[in-house]
Image (cartoon, rainbow, N blue to C red; front, side, top):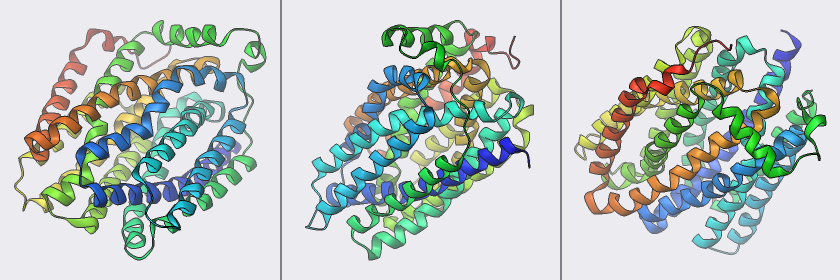
Length: 405
């Protein structure tokens, strides 16, 4: 194994363990809110609290990431996010945790992730050669998928026997492994860091990141597609527990099963990306993944309440589509954007999705209860299929060439 491969797997081993504990904690919080409120609106607002700070800060943190040591930013961000869980756990020891306090904690964790996520994506091209980026995006998705496969079952068991505060403490263990892996890994200094640090106003550097995306053929179309897909994709994932528990009457165990099967699908999609990632057509793969996810969602909404087994099967195929979209999208940025602008470009991409996502969450909160959650799933699925067709047609997106000029 080459040295760069060792560094990659050291980082992603820690990332996988951290993702496992964070996913367990996240699912426990969702079930806790669902059990106490049984409200699509509250679930939507909780998700918004967890993502909206990233949307706002993401417009600016990219310049900070490109200026400073990304490794240190990741370590500090992870410590802040785990510290929030510790604070929630202490409150939970005295009784029920107020929903408002959970929202506040989700917002603080979102701020930490605004720095962490694009830093993680931006360091990959410093380690992995360009010709392997799509394949290793698949391997990264595989690590995450394995963690997501294990987390629902573990969360369901732990949620049934432990109070929420003790589950929250697991995030500290995950952060310990993740930070340890980052300390051990040898990550090259940021390209362009010495030239830009402290010399240009922050807003000017933000604009430079935007210009780097705008001037690359097809990239603004990719940003637009990502924003539109966010309006559809994220509300569906947020409402999975609710449609499982309230419509299909699957309970917490059923919700855990759905998440596990979805993660198994993600694992299959991630492995496929790792094996064939260097031979796929990026544009067609993105359109196909959006269409497949939408078709599964649309059929889900047409099922009767006793159709839970079919829903579980559909989530497997929907899971396959997820890494084929997100993994390919990330690899495109890593291949097309220069390293010195990559943090800003990735933050812009994340922000565009996260700014659009609250619209989908607000629509879901307003209409899921009014028309019925199953009908809302059908409408979102139909919209996703339409977006896939539009993606294939969009002339600007066709400019996204496979090879860099």
